[in-house]
Length: 571
View 1 (tube, rainbow, N blue to C red):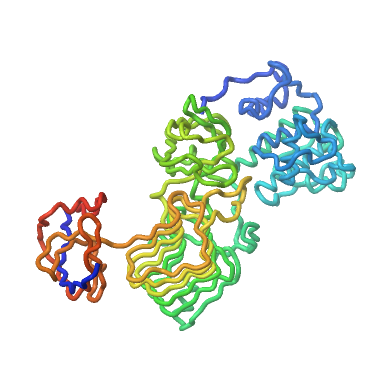
View 2 (cartoon, rainbow, N blue to C red):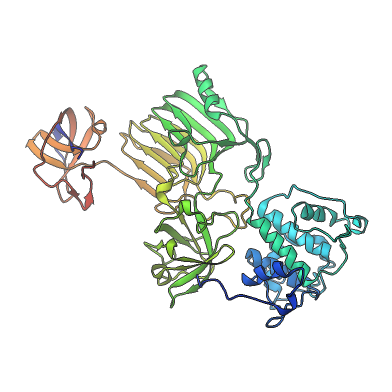
C-alpha cells in the first residue's frame, strides 16, 4: 500500500472569521421473381409492405406519393411544414412525408408544375432517381462517382442526366440488359424496392474519408495532412513569437502522450488557427494540451473528433407499461450495438427533448446496453425501467457515451497566464480542463457546443461533450472567462473545484499536520483557509514552512471528510 503523504505546515494564523426480429415475411407472387431478394429484407424491417397478406404486386406502378413516403420512412425524416403544394392538402395520408421531403430538399423543383406535385401520378424511373440521389447527397455529401453511357441517354430529361449518372456510379441503378435505362418508363413497385434496397446499402457503407486537400463541407476548408506538431515546434525553436495556420481542417494522429497536439514548455507564443479545425483521429485522446507554458495564446481554432465519440439515438416508441422503448440510430452516428469496443454494461445517457431541452423529467438515468435487442437496420429495443418510468417520450433523443474512454478536448496543466480566444470545442469527454500551477488563464469566446452536422448524418448533434463542459481545479489563481458558451454537456455543465485536506493533528496553534496527495499543491507563502469539521470557517493562514513526514500514523479516520472519500491509500 502506498503511504499517505503527510506534511507539517507551520502557519501564521490570521484572525477572522427491442421486440426480437419480426416474424418471417413472404409474398407468394415474388416466388421466382428477380426482385425477391431486394423486397424481402425491406419488408422484414418494416420499410415496405404488401398490398394484401402474401401479395406484393411487384409489377404494379408506384405513385410519387408512395415512393416519397417510402424514402421518408426509410430515413425517418420529420415533416417541417404543412401542405407544401397546392394539391397536397392537409390531412392527406401522404402530406407529412411529402412535407418532410420538401423541407429536406429531396424534391427537385422540376417535379413541381404550377405549384402542384401530382402525388397520385405514377413516378417515372428518372424522377425516382432524382429523389434518391438528392436524399443520398443530403445525408452523405456529394456523390462523386459517376457512370454514363446508357444507350438511350438522348431520351433523358436534361435535368435528370446528372442524377442518373451519379446513381449509376454509386450502384443504385444498373439499367437494363440491353444497356438502356428507360428513363421515361413508369417505375414499378419491384423497381422501387430494388432502388431503395441499394440506396439503404449505400447509406450503411462508411462515409468515404475525405482525402488530404479535398474541400470539407462541414468546416468550409480543405483537409491537410501535415506534421502540425513539428511545424509549431520548429517555429518556436526558430524564435518566432507566433504562427498563423493556413485555414483548413488538419487531420492529426494521436501522440504517445494521449494527445493530438501538445504545446509544452513554451513562453510568450501565439498559435493563430485562422479558423482552422483540428480533426482528431482517436476518440480517446486530448485534442490540444498546454503543459508548463506561460503567456501562450491559442486563438481562432476548433477542436473536432473525426470519428464521433458519442452515440445518439432517436426514440421512436415508448411502452411505459412494458418498461421498454425503441430507438433508431441515425446514419452518421456510431451504432454502439455493433461497435462493441465502446460498449459497457452501463452507459451514461442524457435524455433530450425534441425541441433540444435537456432532461425534461429524467435524472440519474442509465441505459443498460447489454439489454438491447436488435429489431432491424439500426433499430433497437432497450429494456430500461428507470427511464421509461420517468417520462421519456417518442421524439426524444438519448445521447451519451463511455466517459472513461475520452479525455478533455483541451487541457491546460501547470501553466501560467495562458489565453484561449475564439475556440470551438465539438466533442471530447470534457470541453476544457485546467489544473495545477499558477493559473490565471483567460478564456474569451470559448464555445463548448455540439458543432456542425457530421458527414453522413441526417440529424444534427445534440451533445457537445460526453461528460462535463469544463473542469477548473487546483490552481493558485482561477481563470477569467468572458463571452463564452458551455452547453449540451453529457453530464454537468461547469465544475470549478478547490483543494481541501483534512487536518490529521494540531501540534500547536501555528503547526498542523495535514494529508495531501501531491506535495506540490502547497508552497511557502500560499494562503489557506481553515474550517471546522462541520464546515464552519475558523481562520485564514499563510504557509511559512512545510516538512514531509515519513511513516506517520494519523490519529483520526482520514477516509471520511464531509461525506467524500478523499484519502484512501492505493497500491
